[in-house]
Length: 376
Image (cartoon, rainbow, N blue to C red; front, side, top):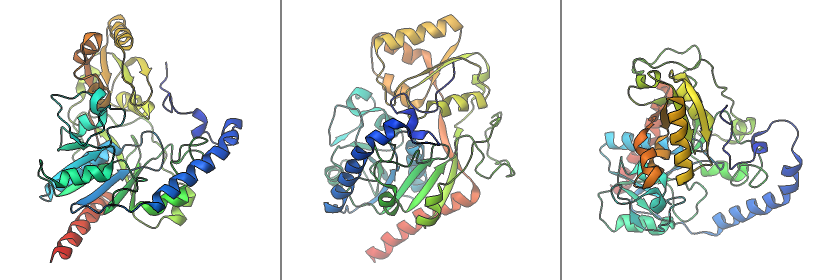
């Protein structure tokens, strides 16, 4: 049973090359309207400027591109500079509208969503559907803060961003290049490109130094390299229309993952690009007995949990999932609680090639320097 190349809640033709499918053509008028509304909403807004620096981690398309690992990476980089980062997120699929500080011991994904629970492990995290209101709430106190890391919201016009990153999946790119619902773009690319100060290409399992690059000295001992290289193709229109820095990263496991090779696994994921997760497991030595894919941000039912537990038992396999999926199971009862206790999360992070790491660090330091100059 193979992992799918796109999540179950996205049309496969969003990422299909060649002739435009009939459905995409039929939805084109709606895409034009959607794109115009997005642009009009942005241009009419008067964004609030926070007294804290605001760094936005967004993307051009719907679906998973790797925003959360980048947000966590930037959080650590800011801490290394003596800053006090705070995450601001809308809490997608959570019932709380906020502003609300996330308490991992109290809240579940049903309350605040999965990503806030992950982010809260690294820094104070505020859920607020209204980003302006969220920034003002952070300013009012309660947590020590100097920089707001805005998780998603590149197209959100209510809060001024001092630095914006757009994350792109190297394989999926911008799909068929059209706007929702005929394609994956959140707005026309010509409108979105100027919103980003830098683009981060998430190359999946491939080596950010290139196939001929040197092995990173800090690579986790025992980590198995991918048996195949993923393509790195920046869409042609980006090359001529975007003049900011473009850096490249790859996904890598955090810590020792040799346990993957000890027993077969049943892998399950409800994320934007589950195939990348399954590839990552196999690249690190896992023997996958069965793959289960669910829609992005899927809230597992008791039936789902019972079925997965049965699959693990039948295969004599360990249940392995993503950190986001495990976060969604946290604090629940019944079979879902049993599934959470029986499953291991495969922890991942981003690694940048040396030159790209320097470029990324330079962007952050330049931003901090501008703030200090403005204060003087």
